[in-house]
Length: 79
Image (cartoon, rainbow, N blue to C red; front, side, top):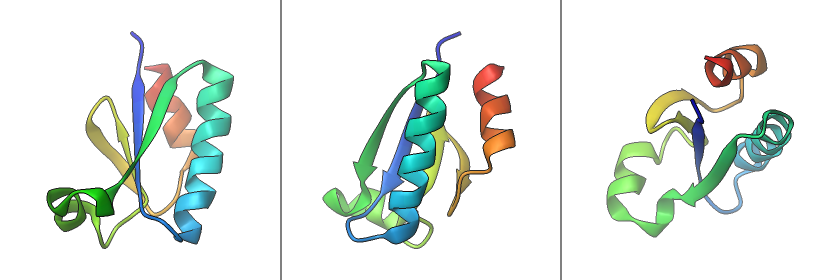
């Protein structure tokens, strides 16, 4: 199964930049597509994710937030 990763972020967020670097590296190694979405671009997204960014979604389901837990993230993408 081909997984898809979405990283919910906001501008000028150091943890978001660090998570994006990790997601880009890991997804690149595994050939998994990923995209980032700025939560401040949509009031509903800001209300849902605003205090917890970065938030990682795998196939549309919340996988984790604030940082990438690499072993757990790789396991989710291998399933």
